[in-house]
Length: 131
Length: 199
Image (cartoon, rainbow over all chains, first blue to last red; front, side, top):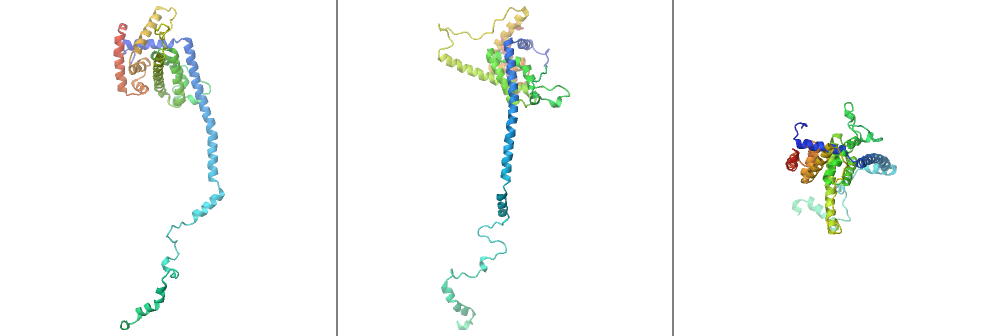
């Protein structure tokens, strides 16, 4: 909106406002200047403080990271463990024999069954007329 | 605009590096230097007290520099006026609470129970007629603007006196552009009635 299009009230109000803003009392002007200088000085000191704090913090973080990564003993051990194949419960490694191929466990078997073994053998092989 | 960068702040506060071939880089210090007087008058109209107005402007400057110094320069005006607007509202609320408490404690009145006078502009020395007339007109306008509802007052101050566009005013006021137009229209209606003798 150009100045000529403005209604008189708006134009006059802005003119008065700008004039009043130009003609501040000296003490107010001085205080505003001081406030501005403090604000900008604080920004500068804040930025400097941030830089001063970030460098040591970054160096400390880097040192911690290096310490965690560089541990020879634990690294060797962990590598050995990592190389070994993991065997889950109830699962045999490849190439090993299964339970079914093992000889019968006499300690856990029924003793009576072994005593009657000869009888069962005869029963299986004898001709039917002999039964 | 006068460009006087503060020593040591140029790197931290300068902006518009990509436009350096066209216009000189504007620092935050330049922006604040340009806006501080109008900000004071705007705060004074709303708060009615120069001390509070200086405090509000100082606080707005600090907050802008602390939080938004890395923003592009074209975003500083709505950010600054938005911060100042909120600061003024805070001060008005505190003052209201303080006046209630003072009222409970029996303050704000003299020994005879008469209400103590509020702040009034300092009596200026004799001036040329035109200047005196302007001062009177400004005082009338300030009083009329102070009588507006808060949102209408903010729309008038930012849009008409500070000369911000509708989008910037909406950003500073934290509302839609339509609301800005509505508030401003109502404000102008009220002011035309109160300042009818200006025509």
